[in-house]
Length: 561
Image (tube, rainbow, N blue to C red; front, side, top):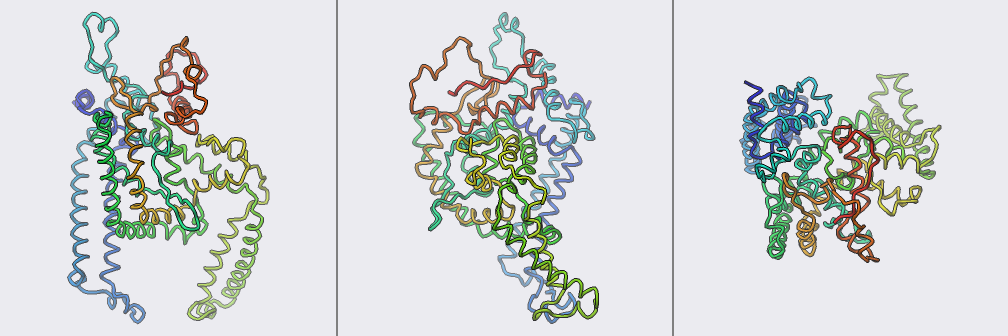
């Protein structure tokens, strides 16, 4: 019976976190066939990129290309037999890696089929509907399944009282599902919000320069995974004991130094790999539409600053996409008269030259297409260049009917990002705020350049954090971890279920802290806690998770701790 087998998957799951992660990945992947197609395309893409790069660097004699008229004259016969041992080793390593990935994906088809049955027979969601159904619908199905099964349902108070039922029960609701799925990510949100890690380096004549990239993020994750966190993503209990602090700090410093050494060794390979992938991915797009080169996106570091507690990845990406249009409108708001004048001048020159070349080409195509305007460069080449310059410069000019109101547009951005540093308040119109925001929302070309630069400077950044910062990292995990019955260890900021006595005194009125150092040390920046709770309730609160049907105004959580 497929339905019984699918129900058995949930009731007998030894690791509920891993099971919920499978449920979530299946939802984000849009079902059985979409996931299979995505995995197949990923394998074929890796195979093509490696094979094509190996072919271009090994099997083509580029020296014969100018004097040759056919591909047979420039191709090297049995090229791999004549290749160096380094290329043959790279080929062998890639083949082993690719075959292992193929075997892993083939082995995962069975589990994927079981998850398909779970969605179809238990949750009542078919593959045709999974692309349009909301995540709330999936959570509702999980909660109903949890409450309907005798082995997972929470006994009523009478049963607990008369049977002495004391076993902590696994809870299931929207918050606990998010807690389990983001058990490790919630720590990272707090880690970046409190600026525990230092990603700056002193640059001559430039001062402190900030460097961050996905590669550096992977290095940090490598240092913390299977050390602070176990295989299930939960924090290890011995990391919470003060007596182990010195040993933990020394172990973390060793891991950071090892990661720095490893990043030095793999940096050349990563730089080549990133350049090849970026070239193959964006060359056609940029040549077809040169204005795409100026498109912007949030930097990896800005994404961690914007992300909120218990915010699942697909919800976070949706919030970022909603912010793109108002962010572009905001950056165009600030008058840039000098730049606009230069763009108009460049647009006029390039447009005039392109018009003359295009007109001459139309009058006598056969003669003019082969005519060299400059030595070795035909009219077609310069026509293409001038059109590209005209397109880029014209695209940088503001619309004639555009009205300047930067504060209004930035408020539209902040409505989506929920990121409002304290020093931005009442200063949204200033160029300083615009400079800070543009550093977070950069062009994709600059993000790629920073990715390459971060690969080079990553060892120094990791070594800087291997000093006193290691003590702060260990203290952070110990001081901001709580144990929740039925869930396990959690980052304290991710636990939204506060229970506060209405008659209890406000701790801020009892404790005399004129300097606010305690709040600064234990608290969060930029109202992250309030924004996280409000955003979570805004998405999930549709009358299902309220204790009563009466609509209540949102109340901020109490100060932590």
